[in-house]
Image 1: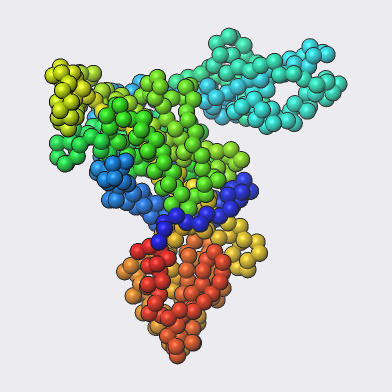
Image 2: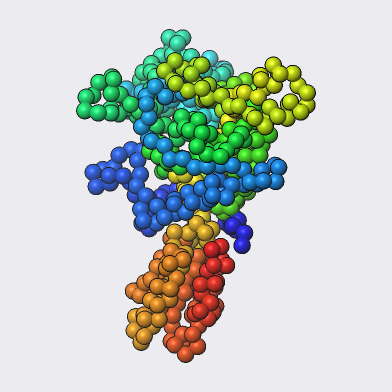
Length: 542
């Protein structure tokens, strides 16, 4: 069975309501606000019984595709990729060397009136000129000039009426940081409209600080990791020394990361605690460009296997002004972007595929970090033999066969992938009785694979249904339920994304068949009760 699911119509995403998706996630036990009984805490979420199962299924799919059964390489052999689970708290010197302590900062501006906080380098001031009266006005916001004008349409209309209906021209725009440096204070808050209420830009560090040990002082200061990647780089030499791997090879990791995001938003899309699925692929510097293209293709294939529509996925190369601190000229990052309901018809980041060059290994090696005690260069014995056979001079062989590998990093957010799968699967069904929505999960991702029901809770039907459930539960995540009308049970399973329901009725007692109902179509048919396990295995791929 192919793992690529049939995706819902991609045009739906522009019409889907995030409010409805969030409400369904809460009502059906996918995602809850963290610490809700205390009023919650901004940027943190809890995954409920069905949410954690869905998230784990996506995690397992990624781990299977990366580590347990890695893809076939260009030479026809499977790639070498091993797993790792590194500590969340590492020696703080590692974060200094990686550039996070010194460079993981954003310039922020606060509104003294409404207490909102903004990325100062994202704030723009647009200057509107009404030519006939020579009046100048500023409107402010975040985004492209056209977006800011659209969001401020009512205010602009009001200004135009005050100028006897004159038209205006857009003379230009400036970033808030530049406007602030010029001493001009007429910038207004995009949230409340108060003029001159924004503070000067201040650096805001995204690292979560903690303390190790009983004494809380600078010597005990440590950090919660903002990415899982550094744990891989710190263990690069350990993996080389203990595993039978050679360049090119990868190290994969799934785990929690923490960023003190200034403005968490869009449900779990941008939060302060999240899970990452990152793989660092170490390769010869000359081959890095080819491997980046290879991983672009493989990662897009994986998202399609989750049921995401090709129409909702694109690649986008990073512009020069958004490159990470590890980037070098000519090397950058490409994002896989998804058409989220809150970005449609535009797209937003789902995964980054970065060429990290040799930045991290160099940063942690003895040559570039006096606090480190490791030479992280790689001796390529196969390359040495090949160059010897080609008659290359000894000095050239020595220079070329020892190097710091370059790294291609497909870095995915597990929580973000989970949200994408939910958004894609969310399908309003106003025409169907019982359920207003269906979650059309790919069957291998569905939290519950099958519902096992007696039609009524009597006449010997519960005993037959429970035996079927007990037979299936060792292979599939199933649910047995004997309460409520069968239509309500079906509607609940539609809303939580269960692909199949099997119902034991009076005919089962005479002919040993059960009714199988399909989630997406609502169609029902009958199969032999002893064929149910094979049916599920074929449909779900186990």
